[in-house]
Length: 386
Image (cartoon, rainbow, N blue to C red):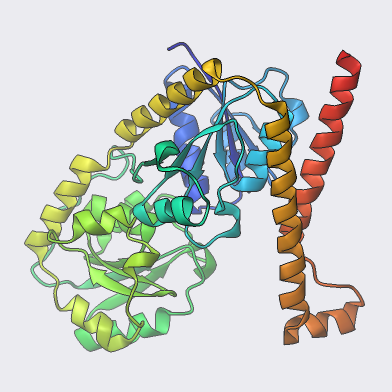
């Protein structure tokens, strides 16, 4: 395959969230392999500027792109549907990275030929909430740049230093701190909302024996060789052991693995299961199976499948129009639902009294506005061509 023009969509490119880091790694890998990645986002923040420094175009206006993409790598439904409306002959694949976020809802469109879940939880969202067929669905587990996340020296027999590692709101830290105090562990906290953002976590994680984390943060700590207790505001999970690492990775070390109440005694129980030799085996398996280069090989293969299927498929302009109309109907319904819920909440009523304006779902409003504008633009183009 020659070099592809790949349009990657993402809601924002501002900080070190999972999808932003994924976009960064994917775009740089595509560039290195001779392809042309372009990132479309609604907010070009620090992460977007850093990616541009790596010579990857990052734009917030699709009119800036003069050559249409060969494939749309869709992430987040608003940006994906906007790109499909703008580039009316481009095939797409859609990646779902989360169970909860509104942005991760899978859009339906005839030119989305593959839907990819990063774990089994997201796969269930695609199949049983998004209505996506199994034939079009794939699971491609998250992976890492293992050249960056190098193995640490062997762990001590007993853990001494622990770290809470998360870029989410860390209001659960007092619970972790109490558990560490009971087990004689010193605790540090790292994360964006804590004011201690780790720009290069691979250089810091090796300093800690035990890490409290979930999802990508957990994967990074495991790759380095730390022992990991799954933990987040959503709940507590187990210590990742060699007996369970395969199952937990299928869940992306995420929300479905955080099934217990977050209490000090629950965390103490998991801390006491620490086993340096077993943690080394877990890290060995992660490093054997979570190589980002292999993951990107599979991603490129999915691009090829989508491009080939699109070349054979008849165009269905009416079907595409109905898909956009149905999408707009859902977005507007969600605006009304959010407005009703929020306006009837204490915070919403206070806001309306103070400001005299209704509380609307800003993100949903933006989605509807963007798609209406794209529809008018494409209609105008069609009239000119005629």
